Length: 439
Image 1: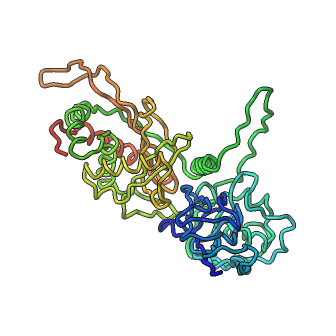
Image 2 (image 1 turned 120 degrees about the horizontal axis):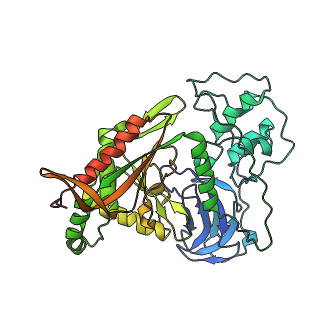
Image 3 (image 1 turned 90 degrees about the horizontal axis):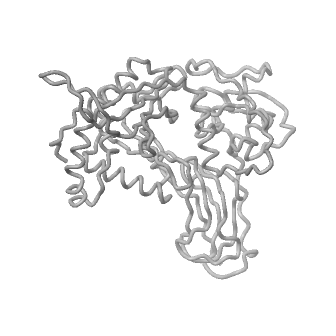
């Protein structure tokens, strides 16, 4: 019978590989066109790969737990019923060979001549980190043990060890091998090997809950961020009384005209975008001693999932939306986040993040920076409070709608002056919102 190769599909410009998490069909199973046959996971989201047409799944070319490149064959489907054992064998997938490093390093094979590792290099370490076939091949060729791999502070998503990380690590192993010159000066390493967590002995009656894959990624990513960036947080209390009155005035007409609910989130994002345009050095990333000033303004909006996990869909080119467009985009991403229908590229490429802790009734928070960004803002709950109102006839006490804005930033590149001015500017924009603001 004729065979059709199923390739790992392209899942967005920023996604180059995925992990095979679960096969939904086994060899010999009948599959319908567009029926999911395998579950995959990227560093961003989980998704499924459907069959391109109906037939019999004759072969699985990769195993659960394998990390597969986009465009690589993962299975074969026969177009007519037949024995799966009669299908041709899958061609042996060549082992990845390290390409020349773009940062000036030579391929791993020429960096140092170590004996092969005496211990196996596993796909998943004791910490839960995945190691790609390329990283495992380099580790095996260079004699890097599993314990050494686990101690490397990865720069990839969730602390994952990348090819660059392991190539940078090799010259520092004290072997006497000379590394090739680096094209530019790198920042001195200030990240020590992670300290061992204290051993915990469960008590009688304690329940042991294994972290799911997404929670492990979040855990690694948060720890990596705290190790990478010295966090500083500035706070401002904003009087958003006019904004609250405006929303109460227009929300019914807005929903009737646009078919969308009007929340405060799109307004917060538009205020942040305006402040970024005025202070673009908040919209940056750091690579060693190099500051990368981002051209696009891509705002991530943290969203809580029904599972209790967190995901951050990204509004690309947020400065190009008007209020209606922003409201529709926010609602669409939030709804699809909750139902698990985000595409991998929709949770990548953010340059600044906002998280609404007020959703949970919190008045303020100290959020962790979403690497490789350098700043994040938390918006607190809006509460009625007595406040001093300055008038031409003197000060008065009145009931106002007040909220806290918390601005967390990376003190390596954002000083208190810029970090403080930025959050103050966002507050000023919100306070100046007109009750008669058109939409």
